[in-house]
Image (cartoon, rainbow, N blue to C red):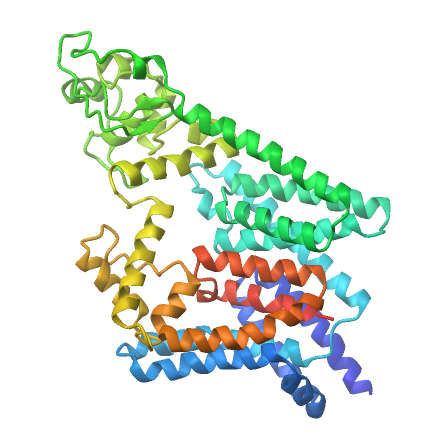
Length: 498
């Protein structure tokens, strides 16, 4: 009995550490889950663990998933990549097996572990915010120094839902105020992080949770109010993006004030209410720009685009012609922004919501008008998904195997003469990754195994319902199981089952 108590306490401590490490350190996360496995082995109680494993459809599904990765090596030509995938997926097998065969946490332990996890996410979000405002030219994707900003955004979403759970329970006034403040902070932080995934996750999960678990009229009214306000704000920003400015609606002038001819592409590519490729005079740009900057127009900015393309977009956003007169009206600070690769002053000075809307609409416009994808995350995903589907059509039944997904994907992109061929990017969709790797037969097996397991979560706490939905949504735009942070996110919350 004494030994069992010690192992139980160690289990809880390691669970706390794993929750903290999965958002702060890959190295520490690996160490902690291995210690968790060692404690599980030393604990014994094999008959209880075997019984829980036999009764858990989720254990069966996870074991089947890992075995599928192993079997997929048989028809993989890139054995090294396949073995690397197996190594990365070891925690996906071990951690859920430990958590699902260990006695569930009690009420007090349950709340303590989740509270410490929430505080860790809060502290890391503060670190990310400080980095964004103190490190010059730091890309927002690098705000979190420990894990992918997308993986961290998923953790922020989970803490948001945990805080919402505190607000709906009968707790103390201090607990509710603390939860409300933390929710507000994380919501603002996710805007700073420009996480489109988080926006979709929060919207969809809130719909499902409110309509299935909190069906009281005031929660539904609150949710509708928030969605209406969000819709109005986004709609206003979309309107401001497309609302044409005077230069865009007036008849096109053939010449600059200096008498040099303008080039008007008239391709319809719009940003900030102006047509980007109208009113361009390359001759005057080449003559005037060296008077304000030491960078050549053909030189690349830190963002990877030429100075001239950045300059044209910047002038366009300011409602200025792309000629010597337009450049002459730039301040030294604006010239410095262009040299740093800022193509639109909105990206530096506007609200996070406007930045997110404008970036998304620009990608949409480029995709619709030019079919360019390089440098645009949404368009690149669409390109990758299309290529993955073509690979699947060639290998529909058993896929290409565990190790050949990226090789076949980029071979197809090369055939398509895609701009991102050879970039090393993954499919960025977990469902398509499974389909390409294991084909219809493998995916049918996974669908059957997890289809038996998921309905049992309906009787679990609301936090597990939210967790499951977050995973399912994130897998649409990410290979969630492709990194340790994603694997642990998909595993750690299993400790909070009933």
